[in-house]
Length: 122
Image (cartoon, rainbow, N blue to C red; front, side):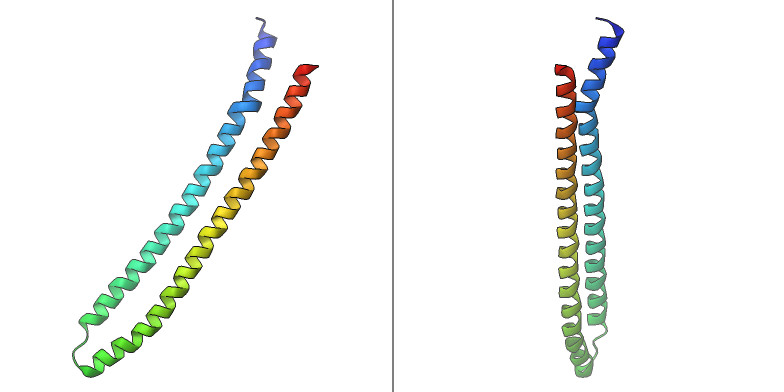
């Protein structure tokens, strides 16, 4: 086998297998990193709210303090539900972006493979 044949085979493997595999792995790692960061931020926010509410509960010393705490719970519940909704929307957007980029990558790989196959057939 000549060096030219080996180089051509290497280029075909690169364009048809290794390149697309690396591109998909990079896309997957970027997605995982964004998803983990989003989840980390959400858990941190939920933990902060929980700790804040626990501390507020410790400050209850009388009926007025209890009334104030209970009234504050409605505000906290509303803010928390809005946060959950926003976090869910972020995850959905990340998923949609990943799917779109994955489809685009697959289409590009199919085109590249088709060109390589027709070139090899000639």
